[in-house]
Image 1: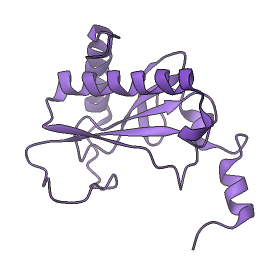
Image 2: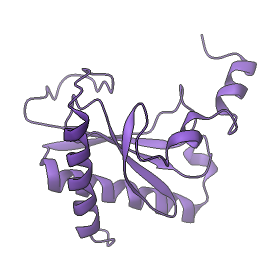
Image 3: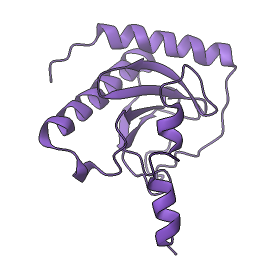
Image 4: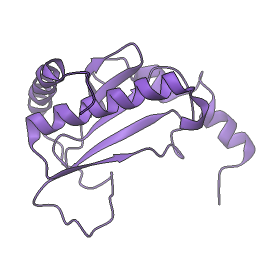
Length: 158
């Protein structure tokens, strides 16, 4: 059963939003900051069951893509694309899945979820695979590599 009206209102409240509270921090319980833009925060997940798994989190508290105007939508997807390019440059996945959900955390964000040759392409995507929790030092090094790749990426659409 879906959230009650009261539960959903509490989850969607920007004052109570966990992503609003910590998406900008260098490190939080779930991820490390790779970079920030005017529109988003890009974070590498601590759970690296799919190496290179990142999130692109909109800075503004918006709960759905449909709430963005065309310019905001374009900037959001440009940052998602650039994150995918950086992940590809660093981790060379076979494919990247882009997932926008938000039914448990109603703050607009995109899971940038690499698929590698060891992953089963016929299996449904599960962002909770694992957990595989590399050392904090290893995640910091991956975040640094992603920062370098982010900087090297062109803003031009292919």
